[in-house]
Image (tube, rainbow, N blue to C red):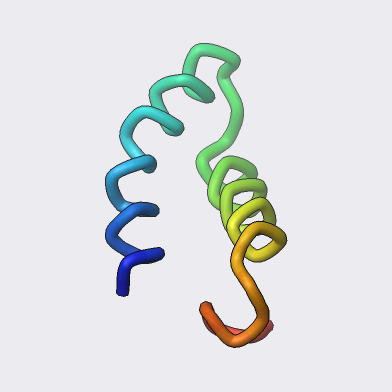
Length: 48
């Protein structure tokens, strides 16, 4: 739950930052999920 709330808080700033480089929203979400998956310990978030 904490990871999810943190993710929701980071989304607006992250999307705004990426929007400047005109990156697709899908790529932003994938990269964000990838970074979160690497940072979070196993079992903290949804697997695959």
